[in-house]
Every structure is written in structure tokens, then in C-alpha cells.
Amino acid sequence: MKNFKTDLNADINGTYKRGIVVATYDDLINAFGQPLPGDGEHVRAEWVVVFTDDDDQETVATIYDWCEDSPLAQTLTWNVGGHCFEVLEMVEDAISFARDMAHEDQNRMYQWDLAWLDEHQRLQ
Image (tube, rainbow, N blue to C red; front, top):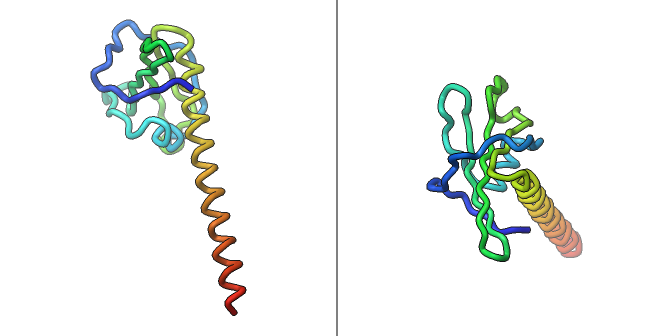
């Protein structure tokens, strides 16, 4: 996976919609952090992300809700903008990576709980 960072100063001029990702609001927060506030009219939440490849080439992506009426916590489709179509795959990969890490953390906690339970039961 490419490296990425949230960058409030990234140049988003000339970006436009390249596709849609299906993700929860929490998925996006876990992957990219807290969003920027939208324009108050069409967009309520937006992320500006800069991906960097192995050759230090940067690619800007924007993720935003566009004219959505459902509460943010219930929004499942998000627009992805950028200068190239590859940003859609980059955003999807970052979300998948964050989901995998969250799942791995849950498994570790579950294993820890089982180990604690085994130890506790042996002491009785």
C-alpha cells in the first residue's frame, strides 16, 4: 500500500469525481482521521489525502459526501475525487487496510481475554 497523509494545504484544484466508495463514516475516520467540515450546503464532511508512491510522486484524493440527506453515521456511499482514476483504488486500499488493522486489534483483544479467562479458571 502507498503511504498517505491528510493534508489541509494540498492543492485540490482540478480534482473531480473519479468514483464512489462504500464505507461507513467510522471506516473513513479510522482510515483518514477526522474530516474537514464541508461547505454547509452540498458537503458535510470531506477528507483531503495525499498518497505518495515509491518514487515520491504525490497523488491527491478527496473523499466527501455530496448532497446526502442521511445522518453522517448512516452514510455509506462517498464520492472520491482526484486528478487521476487511480485515486479510487488508493482510497479503497487505505480503507481496507484500516479495516484489517481494526479486525486484527479485535482478535488480539479476544485472545487476551481468553488467556486471562484460562489463567483465572486455573487459579480457582
